[in-house]
Structure formats: C-alpha cells, structure tokens
Image (cartoon, rainbow, N blue to C red; front, side, top):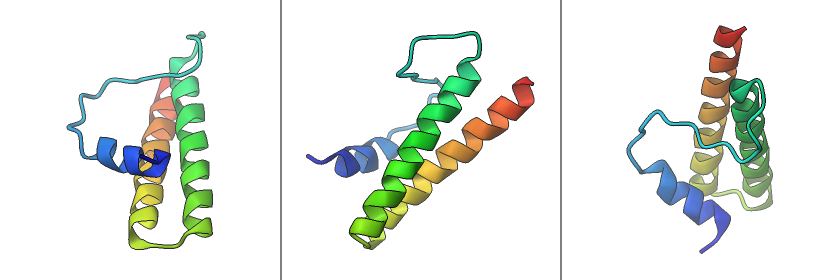
Length: 78
C-alpha cells in the first residue's frame, strides 16, 4: 500500500477532532500541527503533479483542507 493510498483510506475515517503530532511536543502544539499538515499537503501536491489523476487530486485537496484547518487553529491560538 502506498502512502497516498493509506492517506486516502485514513481520510475516510470519522474525525475525532484529535491531533496526532509526529514531532516532540513543544510549547506550541498548534504550530507543530500546522507544520505537519503543511508537509503532508506539499507531499500530496508533488504526488499529484507526478501522477495527475482524480484520486491524487482528492488526496491533495484533503491534505490542503487539513493544512487550512491547522492554520486557522494556529491563528486562533495567538
């Protein structure tokens, strides 16, 4: 299973509103969440450019939506 396929499957899981942060916790978990989401969105965008298809675009848009939500949470925390 590729990373893109796994992300696509995980996107179908009900949102529990929990943050999963890959970095060590710091003073600003919202910043870490945004960084992770930004990295995911950038990787999904690159994957879509390499292999343009409806599924890869949907994965990219879902990742971009997560980045937007993380950015909103970061802005609200400041």
